[in-house]
Length: 178
Length: 460
Image 1 (tube, chains in turn cyan, yellow):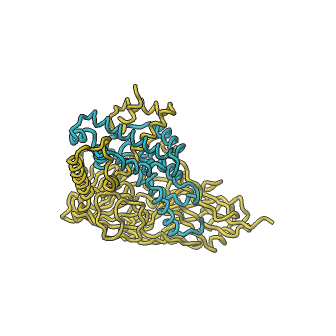
Image 2: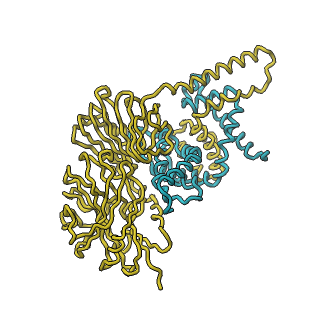
Image 3: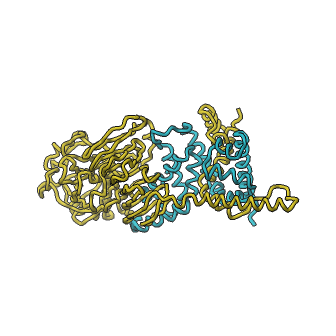
C-alpha cells in the first residue's frame, strides 16, 4: 500500500468505479424513492469512496465496500430544505432491504444484462410506456393523457410490464447456459 | 390490505404515508414479502438508472410482433410505417439534448473526475448534468457569461445558463453585468447574484457558507421567503441543525495503513495524547474537542492565523529503540475559505523543546495562553523545525505522511514521555478568504487521528 503512488491509486479507483458504477447506481435507486436524492447520493458516494480509497483493500469485494459506503450515505442523507420528501422512510426498512440485496448480491448483479435482452422483446405499446415512464420521466397522470388511457389502466399496464420483465429476467437467469 | 399491490403503487408515488409505513413494516417483518419487494424494486431501479440507454436499445431491434401474425399486407405496411414513425420519435428524443449546451468547461487544471455524467475535457460543451471533481480545479463558463471555478472535492449540478447547484464543496463565481440573477443553490441557501464575485462552500453535512468579494448578492435560506442582502467583505453561514442520534452511527474508518511489521502507531488518542488548534483572537474558545485541526497563515487578517498542536504519549518506547518515525495526518475540508486564493502551500512541523510548554490541556489551551508556541517566528529555545510537507492547490483531501532524520533524532533525544509537535503553514494567501487547511483530530467521527508511526529496533 505504501508504494502505490497517487496516480496509480486514482487509476485503479477509476477502473473499479467504471466497472461497478451501474450496479452501485441500481443499489442506490433501489433504496431511495426520490430520483434527485438518488443522484445526489450517488455523486457524494463516489467522492467519499475516493476520499476513503486508501482504506480499500485491493482484491476484496469492491461493490460490497461501495454498498456499505452508499448505505451510510443514504442513512445520513439530508435533503435540501426546499424540497419536500415524497415519503419519509424508516431506517429499519432501509437496513432490511439492503440486507436482502446483499444476501442475493450475485443474482442481482447478473440481472442488468438479462434485462436488456428482455426489454428488446417488449411489444411496441409497452416500449412506448417504458420510454414515457423512465426515459421521459413522466408521471402516471401525464402518461394517461398522452396515451389516452385512464390512470388506473396506465398503472395496471406498468405493473404488468414490470412483472413481465421480472419473469423474463428470472427465466433467462435460470435457463441452463448454452 | 394487499401489500403486494402496494409494492408497485409505491414506485409511482401513489401511496399515502400511512400506506407506505404499513408496507415498510410488512417488508421488515415478512421475509417472503421482502424478497418480492426487492425483486420488483430492482427491476424498477435498473430501468431508472438505465433509462438513458433505452432509446438506443429499442432503436436497435424491432419491437416484438403482437401475438397474432398480421393477415393482410396493408397491415404490414402500417406496421412498417409505425416503426419508421417510432424510430423518428426516438431520434428526436435522443437529439433533444444535443444542442442544449448551457455552459462550457473552459479550464480543467490537474483534474480528476469521479464518473461525472458530463464531458470533462477542456473546451467541452455542457448540458444540464452533474460534475464531480475529485482533484484539481475546474472553471466553467455559463452561457449567461457567469464563470464558476470549482475546487476539489466538489459536486456541482449544472442546471441552466443561469443556475447551478452546489451539492458539496467550494466554488468561486465571477458574474458580469449580463448575468445578473445568476443563482447558486445549496442545501441550505440560495445565492442570487446582483453583480459580483462571490464564493460558496457546502460541507458534506449540508452546512453552507457564502462570502462576497465584490458587489452584492441576495441570499434566500430554507423556506423563508425573506431574502437577505449581503455586500462586499461580508459572509453568511447556513448550518444544518444537528440530528441527534444519527452521528453516533458513523463508523470510524480503519486506521492509517501500517508501513510495516516493525512499525507501531501512536495516535493523539493514545495515553496522555492530545490535539487542538489555536486561533489568534480566540473567538471561539478552546478547540480541544473539535473534530478538525485547522491551520492557516495569512498576512492579511491577523485573527485568521491558526496553528495546530499535537501531543503524543511515547511512554511505551525507550528513546534508544526508535529507528525511524513518520507523522501521518488525514486532510479534511474545513469548509472555510477558497483554495483558488491560496497557492500550493508549504507546512512545517516543529518539535517543542521547552519542557513546560508541553504541559497544556485541551480544555483550556488558547492562543492567549499558548505563550512562546505562538510566537511569530518560533525561537530555537522553544521549538525545532523538524520537517516540511506540501499540499497542492485544489487537493484538500488525502493522507499526508512526512518523515525526516531531524524528526527521528528529535524523538530519540527527547527527554520525557510526552512529545509535542506544532503544525504551521508557511505559505500565505492572496486574499483574506483563502483556504483554511484542516486535518482530522482524534475527535473526528470517521477519519483517523494524527498518528506518529514509530519503527523500533527488534528486541535482542
